[in-house]
Image (cartoon, rainbow, N blue to C red; front, top):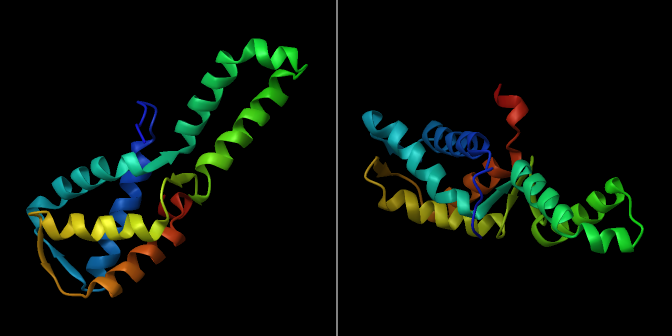
Length: 152
C-alpha cells in the first residue's frame, strides 16, 4: 500500500475535513480550535496510505503500459486498447471500494474504524461524545456521500 508522490492529497484532505466537520456539527466530537489545522494535516497524512486517487491510478497505469510496451505490441493492442486493458486490470485489483475517484484499499467500514481509533488518540480531539457505533455510521455515511464537486 505504498503511495506515490502523485497522490492528490487535496482530495484526501477535503474528505478528512468533511468527516471532522460532520462529527463536530453532530456534536459527536470536540476539536481544540487552535489545533484544527494540525489535526487535519496529520489525519490526511496518516490516512493516505489507505487510499489511492484517480491520479495514482493514472500514473500507475501509464507506467505499466510503458513497461509492458513490447508485450502489448505482440498482442497487437493499440495504445488506447493497451491503456484500457491495463486500467481495467488496475481497477479490478484496487477499485472495489471507490468513492468519487478515491480508491479505498480496504472496506470503508475498516477505514472508519481506523479513523475512530486515530481520533481517540489525537491530542487535538478535546472530547468524544458519542459511542463507536454511532461514530462509525456517521463516518461511513460521510465517506459514501463524499463528492468533491459539491465542496467547491
